[in-house]
Image (cartoon, rainbow over the protein chains, first blue to last red):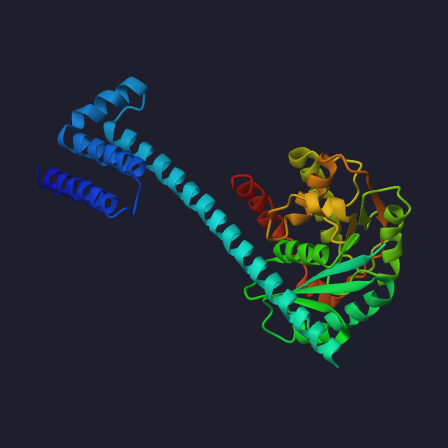
Length: 120
Length: 226
């Protein structure tokens, strides 16, 4: 019972956290709903563990806990992948900025040196 | 035709001046892109007569080539040559690379280490790796198996090709990406034999065998970049 109470509290705290972040516009509404769905599912499985067993039996996994672990691993891999893709995009944006800035600086340097040469 | 060589350089203060001096007699200008080296690469290149563009951060060879290509385009290049700064390519062979473009036979020309001129000092492991890269490029990127050297860093192209070139890879995977882009766009493209000299220095600085895995990873992740 204690573990149920602790896990339920974590899920509720996470839900509150999600909507606080959404209120501060740190995450968009779509993401807030997606995360809320996940934490509500966690809460439901914590309060009614037989639900997980029923779904696990239906999909042929066996134990409800195994089913939850499989789902969690899949979700973790998906999130890691999303982070990698986002990192790639950020790296690309940094490169674009560095490139544009370096060209701008080089052009102004050579324009200045050309002016200097003409004055002489 | 106005030929501009683009030389991406990262911590090449010992070799870049020699490479620039050897390129100047066979090109109209040399653009060295100092990719955030933090040593005297930019100063040495400038002293040797190159136009220098400096990345404030190290972004990789592909990124440096993109910057250099854009800068060369603004300088009015008609033919752009990509060449490494470590001195492994023979500048005398540069005319072989540009000649098919000047004579109107090709739009882009790639140097090949496997068309007769035996690379000097190339270790067997590198040779095997490049053969495997050829197969990988064929299976996953659709580059014809008849293409002898998809990882070549020496290439020349007409400015029209450079302007439409679509390569986003910042790291070493740009070689495959450039070749794929040029072939897919339907440009007239060919390979010519080039002599490459591997020395202890170029081997120490160049790609490691394990970089092959990194290139594959970069190509996979790059496919998801918008």
